[in-house]
Length: 197
Image (cartoon, rainbow, N blue to C red; front, side, top):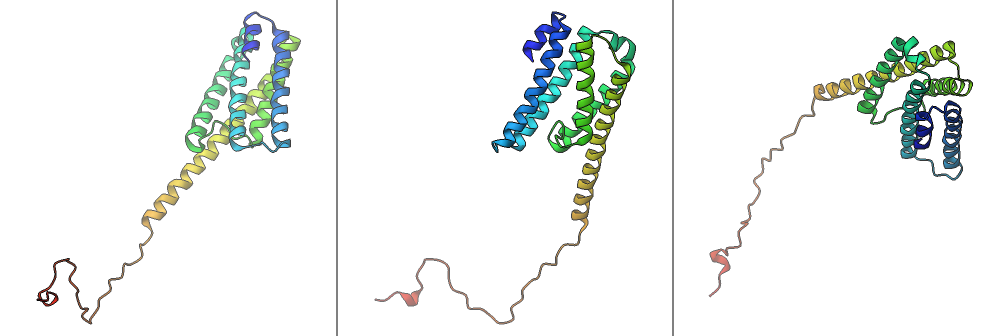
């Protein structure tokens, strides 16, 4: 990504597009290799999701640098989508301790559409409004899906805590012994009967 940033700042839209293809291929390849060599892990999947998020944010900035018309003409929907997406990331981090769910299908669809829009725009050099709208709507749906899941989880956890705190507690039995038990002294001081002259 740092190398692609340099080309984006230099105004090289086509090179950024090719770099984005390479980034997409390496993203697919590392997951495939991890599964093939049985190195897949929850931590790796989370790191992959973080890398995807950083790439998506970078691509957004690259598109603004190279094609400022996007924000000029579609700024309102881009801003609204950005707010919903940022909210979903914050809620997901708070509730699930992860930025995104790598298994969430709506997230994969949104990511694919955003990737396709970026590639077409960077390689062709022209903006495709229907593709942009489709990608932004898919990202909003994915973000709202995450927010709804988090809300349900928070509600379920709160209900479970409330239910546990209001559940009747088991009665504690007090054992009452009617027969006397002999007591034995617990001190180390000898009794008089124990002392022999």
